[in-house]
Amino acid sequence: MKNINTDNIPLTVLTEIDDAIYENAEIGLFYLDKTVDNEYVNRVVEILEYLGYKVEVSNPTYPRNAKHLSIEFGKPTKPYEACELDCAIDMTTADEACMQARSNQYEFGILEEIVNRTYKQHKRGKVLKEDLSNIWSIMGGTELWWLEAYNDIHVHTINNGNTVVFEVKG
Image (cartoon, rainbow, N blue to C red):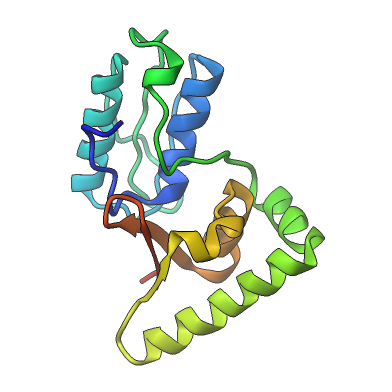
């Protein structure tokens, strides 16, 4: 994936892509958070097409009026080793994310600190930026899902995935 820049694409979106590639699944990615701009949807489509998937974009109705990307995953034309996204992780449901996030007290402490620091930065009109090497332990799908679902914190990367940006949604 060195040819594709995944900066600024929400990590929860990349988790869905990576999971589908890993499973070689024929599934659809139907929900994108409303913080996802069209430019990111276009880049997700570009990434998937690069990997050899056929992508169809649609806008079905959803109660929260959020943007949607419906992807028909067929079998990729490239081997899995050539498809992995550097910053992608596993995805799960919000309730599972909450239980798992709270199950590891060390990681949960880091998550709570990130939430507090993100909101402090938000009050100053800034976003929280952390070096990936300092917070890699909370970059699992459940932790990211917990941040988004329960704390309204949007997470993406910059600097080729080396810097993680936490910002309050809205």
